[in-house]
Amino acid sequence: MISKKVKNIKPSLTLEITAKAKKMKAEGKSVIGFGAGEPDFNTPDYIIDAAKRALDIGFTKYTPASGMQELKVAICNKFFKDNGLMYEPANIVISSGAKSSLYHAISALVDDGDEVILPSPYWLTYPELVGLAGGKTVFVDTKPENGYKITADEFEKAITAKTKCFILNSPNNPTGAVYSEEEIKALATVAEKHGIFVISDEIYEKLVYGNAKHFSIAACSDYMKEHTVIVNGMSKAFSMTGWRIGYIAAPIEIAKAVSSMQSHTTSNACSIAQYASVEALESDKSDEFVSKMQKVFDERRKFMMQRLTEIGLKFNEPMGAFYVFVNVSVVYGNSFCGQVINGSLAFADAALKKGIAVVPGIAFGNDDCIRLSYAVAIEDIKTGLDRLSDFIKEIK
Image 1 (cartoon, rainbow, N blue to C red):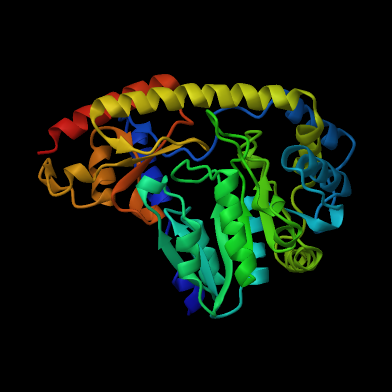
Image 2 (cartoon, helix red, strand yellow):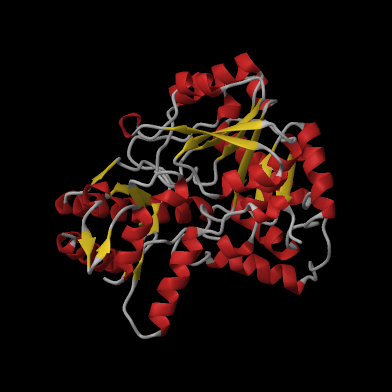
């Protein structure tokens, strides 16, 4: 009855853990959730006020399927200011969230049997979208000693005659890795040599720490700009996850294809959210908001790293996004309350009994680790990590 492509979609482990945690909370149990994939800040008032203006002036009708012109212009200005990239509004397609942008971009590029190279660990949605498009995901395991970043040599070795594109996510979910300009340029050299398209997910670009700087692969050369689809959105930088505004910057042919497909799937993104997004991108207040949020995340990041080190767990320092990818394999093979901890899923399940909700690394392609989000109030981080410390000590 159900199509093979849809049948093959794996249920989200992150949602499964979240559902269990919510059930426990509903039963009156205390649970600290480290699964958050969204900023815990409210959308700024000046953006909310813009949405109210949209309602007041009756901006509640359809926009063009690819998005309103004013927002496309604002996005073009953002790319020039932040990334040194020149795009025209015709290169921009606005979607109902960055996940929708990814779906349409992958579907526009990937044919049945095409191979898509994906560094692992990876955001769990990527391979599902490749599968829906009829493609085959070629996973490349990255090494912690390389910061969980694929090297140019590893990239090249994974290429075959069937390779169509490469998915790059920097800053990375779940590892927090940020590729340097030199690392990006090395990958671009390989992509250009073999004529491979790149889908570059840059949704966390504003959330980088220390000396890390975001650099877009599309800025490497004119060739790469014409062979890269940048995916971004309003959700992380402006704490607008529920507003569902994502966008792509792409070569004209790809942008037209995505727009055409979108006109038959989702049609336009919410007009009110688009209107508010113009304000978010153009307001003088936005730099201050993003800077404040980034500073708070950085403080939490430093605290979490310090506490995890005290607990004795290994991890790579995250330089972007708001996650720490923690290796917990040291306890595998031992038991907690009669339950053998034989992987990240068992670890996450057992941790719930101690009132901690974590995301198992197997969801991201690495069963040795768990993902902890620091998009959580510092008081909850402290309490949660104290519980994690006690939990680790009780595993025998």
